[in-house]
Image (tube, helix red, strand yellow):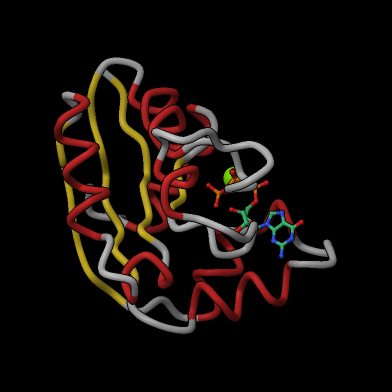
Amino acid sequence: SERTLVLVKPDGVSRGLVGEVISRIERKGLKLAALELRTVDRATAEQHYAEHDGKSFYNDLVEFITGGPLVAAVVEGPRAIAAFRQLAGGTDPVEKATPGTIRGDFGLEVQFNLVHGSDSPESAEREIKLWFPAL
Ligand code: GTP
Ligand code: MG
């Protein structure tokens, strides 16, 4: 079994899609190991997205992710990292995500793509430590 860090980003929360996302996670067969609504500070957001530091969209991304409450979760199950990325769909909700995925069903713009999921075991470990240090 594997763990991954999932975020329902502020756009997902403000649009009332928290239940929809959690429901898809549960129906897939994945389990919630932690779940919390919180507003993230700039330092945490910058660490979370450190790999994108210096890119054109980095500042907008950090502003967006700190701009309102989000839901952070640790999701667990066999191949949880890939399984949640499958549920989420590709980064661009129109060009890459297909209908049937969270981004493909509910998203229009790259920045406002509703959810985050860790992209590798190394990212998952780093991100879970950052968001849920007690776990
Ligand atoms: P995350 O799960 O959020 O990490 O998404 P991802 O792994 O599918 O994409 P990536 O890590 O490459 O990018 C992180 C986030 O930055 C994306 O989810 C988008 O919100 C945002 N982003 C990525 N590329 C662009 C871009 O070209 N323009 C803008 N405005 N935002 C982008
Ligand atoms: Mg990513």
